[in-house]
Length: 622
Image 1 (tube, rainbow, N blue to C red):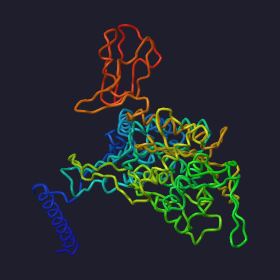
Image 2: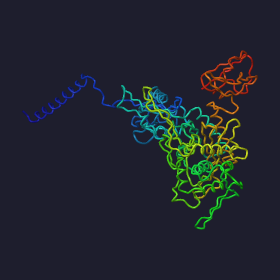
Image 3: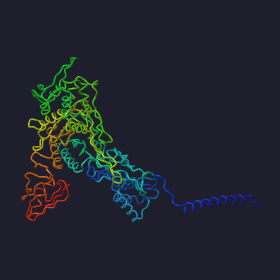
Image 4: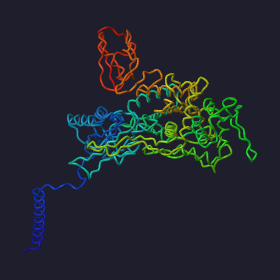
């Protein structure tokens, strides 16, 4: 046989064997029973949701789509048509789409993380037009229904659906789905409930936004906290951003000014410096110091340390130092204790350490050790300079005064719930340490009440029917160019605990770099805190001096409570608890409809509207 034919037969035989082998393998796969997928393979991971304390949804997973294009399949003559469809269904700028479609790599993304509605709309439009060359890939995505509400606390995720900031990063292990624990094709992460109240958060954010506009400020920060638990009820950092579109914001808006931004607190810090001196025994409530307009002391080196005051206050004690915000008095008081003891006691209030509020990033602030102090450091710290703090630290330290001298750890995590609805982690108040005795804490609270008197710096924070312990402050800021205190940049702040006799809530606010008519904390931050305290008191039904009291002896009685006074004009019933609305149901001339439980949040008609016989009044409660 010819050798040429032998080689051909051999090649044909080899090809036949390979063909039979492939056919056999295909038949084996086709006829074999379906195998279990490897652990984690083919599993759809669903990230856990984030809620406020009452179950209002703040973050949830949803189906998003990455839309890509394959240039070889695109018709160059239809670039304008492609770009028009992209703009119509995906948003964005048509010229940008035209540029990207006209030239570049063969494979490229037109849009990332597009919501399902827009993605399907785009896909349907392509099908109707008979256009090809585009691909839609489903990816796990995150949606924040409340948009910028508590954005810095909630945080955001990256393109891989991993937490990058806020609670999304802090609770990554809880929120992330574990493919090895999948049930069927899905694996679910746990749900996280934060301590914030979305209703209060919204109201205080609106209040702070108005203050930022009114005072032409660079930023405003506010923290509301439960005084007896350390739970953060509101976490406001403005300017903020929409975590659904966080890449559209700059780093200035991303900055968390509650837990990360550190600054000199100014005279608000006198609360803690005076409390430290009182706890150390350096002063008591009767100790007196003479303020003639400045503090002066000559140290052993011959240097004279001078600190100016806001005025000449004469003989001042603890109460007057806080009431007048007397720099000289605070400085003279600091001379009664050793620097090392002063440093250690202030550290016990939580300054110089991370608060531990369940956040991914917390600043400890800056508080230098005494061996790095100059001759003027101790009296300067006493008045709120040469120490950097955060708003979260300033608020959390106040729990010491509210709890008889015991510092509580601030909390932003309420509980963690698994996919079956079972609580896998519940947080409780945590006592960090005892800082001072009960009598000393009560002495500071009482002294702070004088701040809202007509002679005090915080008179604009006064609420007539609610006892408040307040301290205001105005801090100079360092000019980074000159490394000296700026003549134009200030931080105006105010701290309030209420009611003073048994504090239930703490509110702290700071207005950063105001450019309006005033920069003083007592003038612009005190009214802001007053408004916030009123909102808190109304929302949570806090007892006021003029309010009806409640006595309990097996049944609830409201002494002196009569029918609500609705005449020809509709009053403002928002914030009124349900128990005070029941007399309205006895009215026969009007119809009153009450929906929900708790306190009035919406009413119809609006306050000031006329009320006529036969009208229907609708009240919604939460």
